[in-house]
Amino acid sequence: MPAFHSKFIATNDVNTRTQEQKRLFLALPKPLVFTNGVFDVLHRGHVTYLDAARALGGSLVVALNTDASARRLGKGPERPLNNEQDRAHVIAALQSVDAVTWFDEDTPYELIDWLRPEIIVKGGDYDMAALKEGRLVQSYGGKALALSFVGGYSTTRLVERIRQQA
Image 1 (cartoon, rainbow, N blue to C red):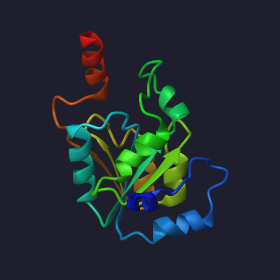
Image 2 (cartoon, rainbow, N blue to C red):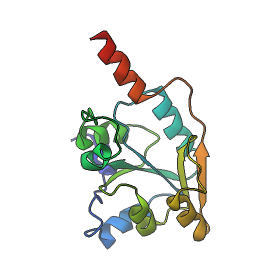
Image 3 (cartoon, rainbow, N blue to C red):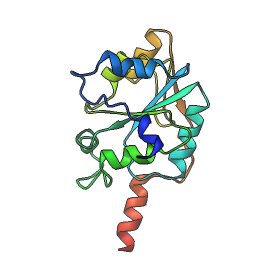
């Protein structure tokens, strides 16, 4: 079994999150940085973003949308292209990532409320003050930050280019 499997902390069901799972997160070096997304087809923009997020704190937790949650985002009927387990393996193998988890809700609000990270980050197209997750983290003294995009990288556009060439 690959060493990065130790980074998996399954929390996708809001009703069954345990104190043992929370203890695993709390054992990570602080400050805890949290981000989330589908991360369907990993590209340069993703890994640059994740590296920048990790540099903000002591450890980085990446929460992946489950397949059902990702489908509800409206990115297309065939998305995600990679299932949640495959996406988790790719993300966990990254040096910048300290823990990988999942959420099945439309947003990770409940997971963030349960975990209480010191910092949450999203891509530069988000207004963190407008996101209820951002307001939640700020309500208990944490930081909610939008990180700059690496221009020219988009999974949706990549998928469109591949389909046009097929």
